[in-house]
Amino acid sequence: MWNRRSALMGLGAVLAFAPGLAAAKGNLATRPTDLKLKLNGDLSMSTKEFKIETGKYYKLIIESAGGDEFHWMAPDLFLSSWVYQVAINGIEIHNVKSPEIEFDKDGTASILFVPIRTGRFKFYVRGQETRGMLGEFIVE
Image (tube, rainbow, N blue to C red; front, side, top):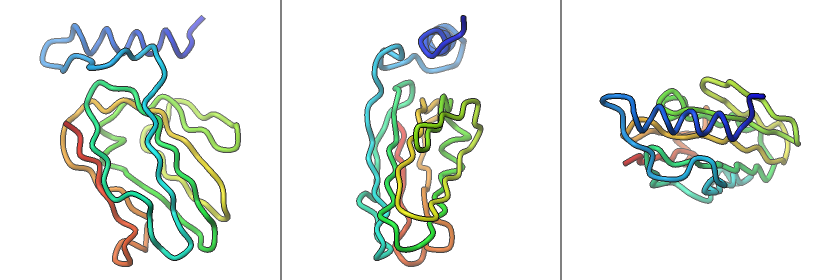
C-alpha cells in the first residue's frame, strides 16, 4: 500500500542517491517543520520571509483572518518543490503541482512540501503585492 511514509522514504532515497541532487537534510519520514503565515484583514501578513532548506519536510499553515478575499500564491517555490499534500478544512488534496489558495472568508489551509532547489521565491496575495502582501522564501 502506497502511503505518506513510503512516499517520503522514496523521495528521500531519490534525493540521497540520484547523481547531482542534494541529499535530504532531515528525516522525511518524521513530522514536518511548521511554518505559519497569517493573512490579515488590514492587508498585512504576519511573516514576510521564511528561511528554509532543500531536502527538509515543511508544513506551511496559512490562516486568513477574513475581511477581504485573498488569493495566496507562491508558484515558483512550489514548482521547485515536491508538494505532498494540500489540506483545507480536513479535505486533503494530493499530487498538486503548484497550489494557489483562495480564501473567500476566514479559514486555514496547509501545504506539505519538500523544497528541492535553492533560490529566492516570492509569495504573495494576487492583486495586493503593492499593498504589502508580498514576501519571500529563501531556500538554502
